[in-house]
Image (cartoon, rainbow, N blue to C red):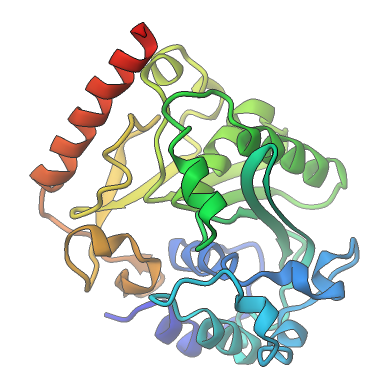
Length: 288
């Protein structure tokens, strides 16, 4: 059993249209590196991950990283990994502002076989990101969700191989929303890691019908994030080395082979209770 950095260091076959759950978690975690700070990744042509890793000493890449993340170590690991170093990263975007209130990050990875992976960043350490999170139960769609749909529509329109959409936390919410809102013909699957959910009327109203069967949702037993709002598909519970709500950290998730290690424990009662409380508060807000 390993975590993602150990997995990256041991993975040898180059990524060629054979994305595994462990690979998807790796790419989701990489979005917390602000590749938009470099001219290569934010260009339409992009550059290879091994080139981005050579710039790992630049502080701007990690200006919004959480102290609990190992973003620099992961970037350096993928830059040296036979599986990831030849993956191209392009169209990196970062938007943070108060008017409109939104914290948004996205980029596109292209593997050596031409398969594309559109990945959205979760909540970072900015105050804007945390403030925006309070709107997900009250507004639909949010500004960031609209931006995510436009980004995926743009990425799909560029042509190329099949697309997988990926995200962690808020980024997973954006991935699910964008895939359901645009549903490009080349969409292959959606990986959502411990996502923020959606308002009940959205989930019950059939918004996600077109991507039913394409959604692969993973949560931890101790999470306080995924229980807050309903999810659009059943989730697989996976193991983490960190307890309770700290298990939301993707660097703590355990990997077996190229899969995520399952956890037989039921979701925590505290997370369920918190979700119930949020549901009550949202109903009161809507009536008011």
